[in-house]
Image 1 (cartoon, rainbow, N blue to C red):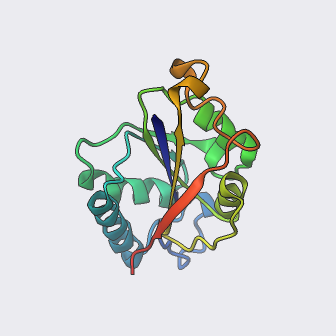
Image 2 (cartoon, rainbow, N blue to C red; image 1 turned 90 degrees about the vertical axis):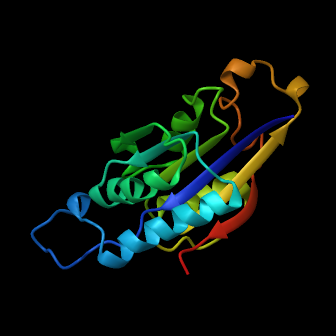
Length: 172
């Protein structure tokens, strides 16, 4: 069996008290920094440690990732992408398609409303993703059903495949 997992996480709670900052530049609040660490610890306890992290390049998403990284052993490589700041399904599909076959679990950090839409697109389930919520998705395939294991992530999106929502990890 070939197993692939996605941790679809909304960034932690951000600060709104600095009106001179652009939306893209908003940092995390103190609570957001704590929540990101809490969720990372819970992911590790559940055995959901990413092999790679891909995040929006917005300040609050970057800071969420930076708070989480020390909990993962080994720390996965991180890529910050502008396309995940205001993204659609095509952006997420492209991101997944470009993943290496060695990646079994990927952490994607981004924003609403896109993340709730992506969750619905992948699973067919409507769920609310509040700040610092991480949806745990998985998919198991028989090796014989995958034409090219070097490009394993390439075709793992709807309508060809429907992901399973295993849990939503929250900081509380």
